[in-house]
Image (cartoon, rainbow, N blue to C red; front, side, top):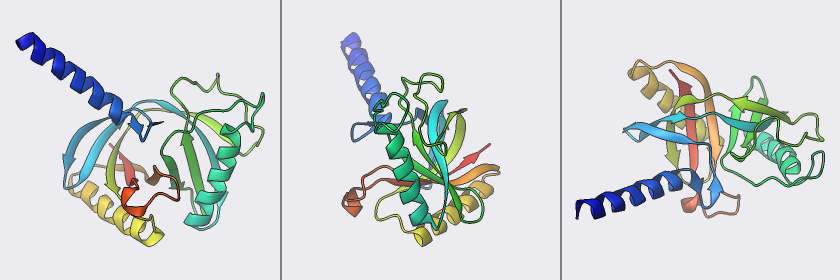
Length: 193
């Protein structure tokens, strides 16, 4: 009987880990949850590869411009015309002034050296080292003012625990624009140590 329970637990644990790495069937960067407190997850992300572009404009304009450039790359805008699977989230981080860096995580099967070269010189491929992030997840339409408020509260939460912000805020979007607001997954996070 103990072997049956152990086997069932291993299957459930494996399923939970596999589910954690996908959102609605789309691959996500690998992470584990270290702790959860006050609605904030401390996550440890593993190394992964991103395609990124830095664009200008307000937050909404920049995410659209960045998404178009990166979608062009994965939908065949690269040497060889290879199609690359879509992943989640689409990430956006302020880069100073009205500049924003928008990222797609590349599927785990690729390394920087094995990805096709982008035709658009603005699209860069980069290996990201693993890091630790404090993350707040929420649903709804990701409005700029709301996200800035969530980022300020998260920064206060981080400071109250004696952690140091090393990058961010990062804004992450997991669902297509036509997804109903209450079914959307959005996140605000900071890299911390």
